[in-house]
Image (cartoon, rainbow, N blue to C red; front, side):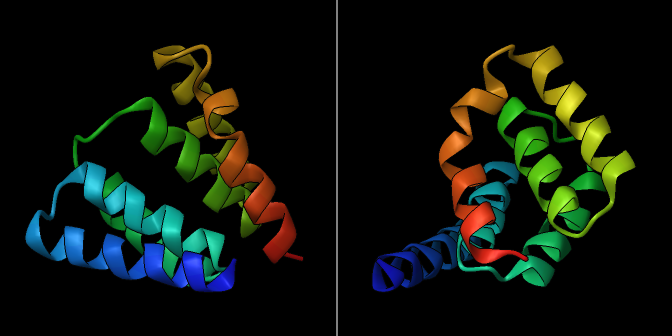
Length: 105
């Protein structure tokens, strides 16, 4: 499974290099997060926050990243934004939440 996650990270990096869009940045943050690379995921999310990019997947991912680094106020904000844009946003990211729970203290 770790090899699959590393492969996913490599694909996400290549995708972001070729197409540095908000969606690609979110996928890259998710790949980092799945491997427990919370600092890298946080850095990517911080870059996106500075832009007008806003999707349920971004806000849901941001809420998980901020939760992982114990920034509960920011996590709560992004959680609310995700649900505002899509009531199922957090359910749609359950796979990522479970991954985060396995790799973060």
